[in-house]
Picture 1: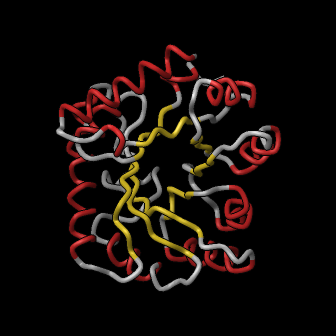
Picture 2 (picture 1 turned 180 degrees about the horizontal axis):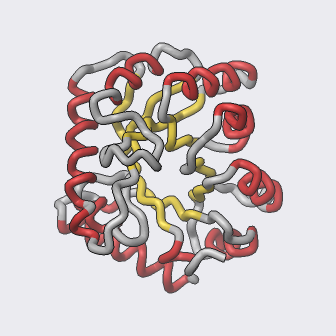
Length: 227
């Protein structure tokens, strides 16, 4: 695994340099869905510290098993409102806020815990009915409304483009998210920080980095196929 991680980090750095970016601007979220706690521990031993989970219950079990490690956990899946209280307990960053109702529930649960929860707004750039996310035209309004909540902090945007076999086909979606980020940033909405772009996975992360990703979510290239 150490060699796979080394190669992924090299590819991230090479993609950043091609785009004239500092590789240090790009964070790696190692996606551990379906992989056991032992695999996370091995990745942590190899130097990784940020891990992403799609399901609250699976994450809770792993986080408990790895409590002796100093790790940061990100929630990257679809979050149901009735699971928001657990997500606020477990995760440093929630990548997938797709509605004001969800943002309000996160705010409510974070308030009970005297916590300000960092979140990203998920944008469905492909308008795919099977995927969550605000539409491109709705994202700024969602940011504006959610920014009024005292216990939620908007840190940026996240997207999952349609699946393509050819990573270059995903590039326009990554570029569109960057442009949307810039448009929202230009609105200077109080309490909205457009510093993070979560985009790019194993099949297309280099294109995402070249287009401005600050978080890439990579599982298969690190851990192999899902179990």
